[in-house]
Structure formats: structure tokens, C-alpha cells
Image 1 (tube, helix red, strand yellow):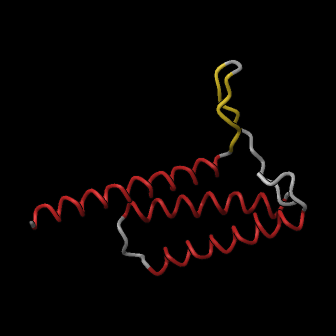
Image 2: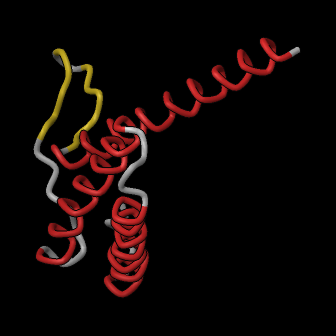
Length: 113
């Protein structure tokens, strides 16, 4: 992602913005220490994966090293790294939790009626 951007644009868009986002997530984790465990784990996965990619970007001229190429024969699913897996797991967990929360609110509203 961003391999065709200029080095300045890649730095600001993929390194500086990412670093700011990670600071926000870190702040949320510290400020809301007593949040539900699943939310904490999801945000922790986002933070860990983001830090992994940020380290790559900071040390490799704005690029991230991807080394896992999954597929069967000629069918490839994509190229990614462990940090990407943590980010996707955290985002997926947050997505799932948002539906769980929505479902719980709907069930609670029906019970009150």
C-alpha cells in the first residue's frame, strides 16, 4: 500500500497519520482501563499490529515488509505479515462486538416493552 506514492506523501499519510492513530488507541487503553476484556484485547491487537507496521515504515523508508503469501497452487489470497493479521483480528473483533452490543440493546429494549 502506498508503494507508488512519493516518499514525502508516504511518510505523512502512512507513517505520521498511523503514529497519531496509535497514540489515540494507546490513550484510550490507558484512560479506559476498565473496559470490557474483549474490547481491550481488540484495541490491543490494533495497537500491536500498528506498532509492528510503524516500525517497518520508520526503518525501511516508509515501506512494510510482507512475507506471507497464502494460497493453493495458482490461487493466491494475498500477501501480508503478522502485524496485518493482528490488525485484521482486532478490527474483526471490534466489528463483531459492535453487532453483539447492538443485539443486546435490541433484546433489552424488547424486554422493557
